[in-house]
Image 1 (spheres, rainbow, N blue to C red):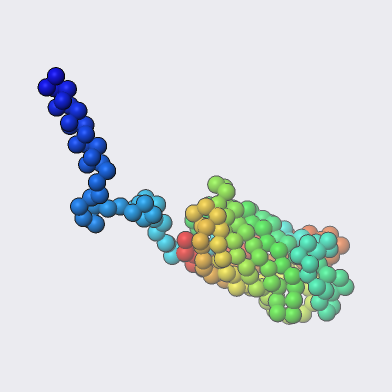
Image 2 (image 1 turned 90 degrees about the vertical axis):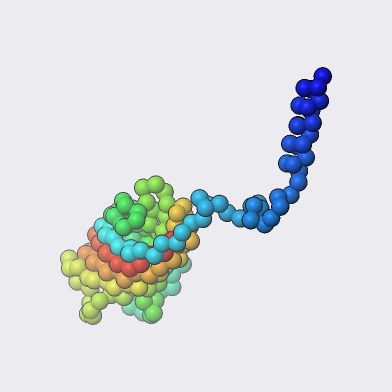
Length: 188
């Protein structure tokens, strides 16, 4: 009987101590404070890559672009391609823009093999002047802003300079080969 009373008393004391608050704030862990494993440390690293693909002139105009002087109709220009980037590896690239008097204003998304995405916007200009010549490459320069993403790039920010080249095949085909390269920095 003595041992039952001793065991019962010990259980009551253990339960009572579980219900008491700790003696000092140094032993208190807030229910809302993230653990060390949950804290994402921001990285500011170089972001560069190369993509090859196609430029598609889409007269169905999914972005709702307005016609510009010298252009017979409103058109959305898209780019699709694959390549590689620092911190993402192999990527699929998708971009779309409207031609405006202020330049080619667009948005883009890069999707890594694991599904993580980096998204952003750009303002591009054709380098050089003169008319486009069928069968010749024209070159582009763009200021790129990184505005977010998914997965580990959820809160990504950054900037990059992008250069590109497109083999002008005219509007009879509505698709031309293109390639792009960018260098900048990304924080995530």
